[in-house]
Length: 260
Ligand code: COA
Image (cartoon, rainbow, N blue to C red; front, side, top):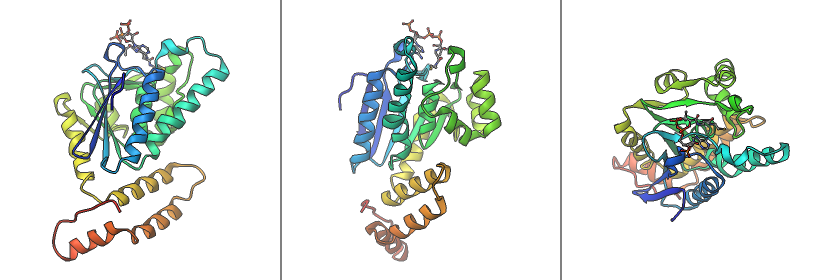
């Protein structure tokens, strides 16, 4: 797929997506968001894709936020539209995608950039990365789900402090408070993300999808996650993958999952 602001490449069942606006620290403008929405649909619909590795071009930034130059004259209605369409088409779409997204945070992940990383299922950060939600320095608040996802990931007190002070934190601090799963030297960042995705791609795809739906249900208001788990667990039994996985175990061989 050819995009203007993304590099997207499918290799060995992993879709590598790089946000490629290095001169603007990979800030999310409208075109980039539209291309991200498109690539998420591609990942969801393409059987060969077993996971997505999302990163930013260059060594300085993952994504330094939404593109501030695009919304400086917006009013209430335009602001709501911006947040709603972004949440629906990109941020919630990533969270609800049943192919796991791993964010490889290679530098600044600020505002919409941190929100993008938080929408991903797993986060790995370079030890040089810096993270924060600085929107209140602009007279704004996070609009792409940041107030909700940060609170769920690190708890109310810490989320309130990060959002209201606009502090930037280091990767080590982010790991300590559960905002990222792993911190590695920048040179090992992609390898670490690949290591995780390479494990996942060997597992049963429909079970991975079911697991993502259940984990999401645990943090979504008004959904009984235990009930979702019971249903998803039951559905696994009717998959070819379960028969293959259980059969392979009993026959002492490696399972070959088809995602059916
Ligand atoms: N939106 C639009 N452009 C952005 C941007 C954003 N969120 N973040 C960086 N850029 C642009 C800068 O305007 C600059 O463009 P220019 O060279 O055409 O002037 C370029 O990216 C490089 O950024 P610069 O600020 O010169 O780099 P720096 O090393 O001095 O500072 C940051 C790096 C990340 C601290 C700084 O760019 C920053 O604070 N960015 C905004 C972060 C933010 O508030 N994000 C939340 C948005 S809601």
